[in-house]
Amino acid sequence: MPHETPLIATIVAGLGLAFVFGTLAQRLKIPPLVGYLLAGVAVGPFTPGYVADQKLATELAELGIILLMFGVGLHFSLKDLLSVKAIAIPGAIVQIAVATLMGLGLALLMEWKISEGLVFGLALSVASTVVLLRALQERRLMETGRGRIAVGWLIVEDLAMVLALVLIPTFANLQAGGATTPASLLGTHFDLGIWGVLLLTAVKVTLFIALMLVVGRRLIPWILHYIAHTGSRELFRLAVLAIALGVAFGSTKLFDVSLALGAFFAGMMLRESPLSQRAAQESLPLRDAFAVLFFVSVGMLFDPFSVVRDPWPLIATLLVIIVGKSIAAFLIVIAFRHPVATALTISASLAQIGEFSFILAELGYASKLLSKQARDLILAGAILSIMLNPLVFAGVDWLIARLERRKAPSPSRVAPAKAIPVTQLKDHTILVGYGRVGNIIGNDLKQKELPFLVIEVSEGAVSKLKESGIEALAGNAAQPEILKAAGLPESRNVVVAIPEAFEAGQIVQQARAANADVRIIARAHSDAEVEHLKGLGADMVIMGEREIARGMIEELERSFPGASDEDSPRVAEARVL
Image (cartoon, rainbow, N blue to C red; front, side, top):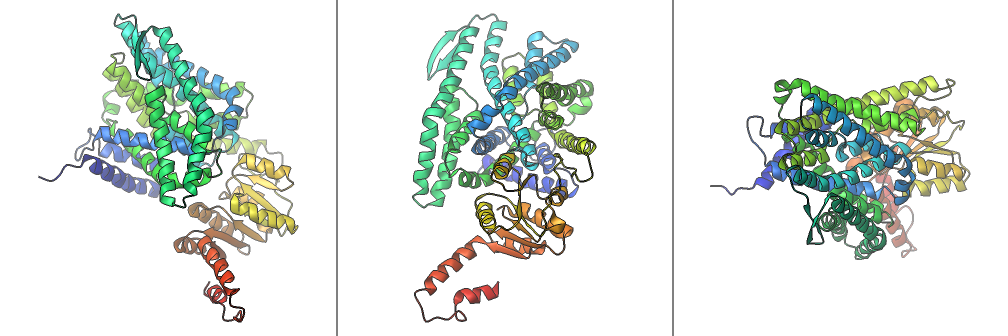
């Protein structure tokens, strides 16, 4: 009898099938996310063949949510969060209330109890963390104004759901005839009424946030700095994961806040450290892998036959999630006098439900507040809304571009989301990315008074560049419209200073297609990346490790004054390149 390994089997089946279905989806021009969901359906209990361990898959997915929210926190400062509080707090609260009322209305039409309708509506009101962040990251909107509002809105929803998860057992107890419900603080149990539970929850969340701001803000960066000075990359990577998982788990056990919220605050506190960028890079591979397992675990919950068995309630549920919530969010954002593009992006971001909805559905079902039909409708609505969300975003992207084209006053305006005029620079350098490498290059070009323009995804970074007198453009350089606005046809050089080889490859390919004569210089971290970028049209690809070796060789040469340049290993290496 072979040794049973359900954890290994679940990971292998989940990731293996996600790879197969994701590749097929990509081949068919469908978002890979849909393939991941279908992989979950294939290993779920409602389809024939192998059935993965659903409980293990769900716990693995929680790791993905923790790491994803930790990564978001690394790029989202407290200042960013406070800058959107004026719209994120009232907007999220009103949108939750409207969606809950729509869900209650649908429940009453199906002759459910009011209590069941309220929990059902609440489950339909909260968007999926993973789906929303994936959509923003794919469109490079995380550091834009629209992205900050969406993430801030998400955090407020998260806090509201923390409160809801505490209150649902209380309502269940009251409905069953009880007057009080047990609550706990640091292991001490009390019998509290509903207002006592509310007060205790507010105290716990306040204590957690205060602890993170006062202690975490100093302790977490200090720990990483100490580990970084040991020189061990392995220990540094382990420290990043231990902080993310440890803070998330500890905050849940001690303060009853969600794992996602605890991880987000851990990342946000770590952002105070200059090592935050390295921490984000170290956690990225695991973050992506476990995020895939999240979608697989969601797919496992879906019974595809429910679409045929109970179609009309499911269609009505989808309309509440995709249409009702989106219209409510759109009107709220417009009421706060934000641009139509921002309102459309927020609407698309919230047009789905996810992990919190599953938790609410299971808790409501266990508390006997929800029927099996209500729970199944929530799960099916989540699956289908997640699958349809890429199409919603595609429609919104098309609509934003169309609206901006109509708004453009003249042909000199470009068509992307912001009508930015085409630069007047000629014979200049286009510098893509203004991180550590881009900053050094930009400073050198500025000192030598050479004309150049920067393309950056961060609107905040672009604003700072413009304030310092550097011409800059906010957007994704892989888009032909952005390169055209940067004056690619009249430019002399394109320097792709971003570290991601796949994104850099798209930029190189677009730049070469638009200007066959421009000189393209890129950076890489491996020989494979060098070949990849050269194959797409880069004239020169600089590999960091190779340049470091050249610098060291040059220093060694100084100890041999008799050596000529012709015999120099550095020159020989240059010839090879």
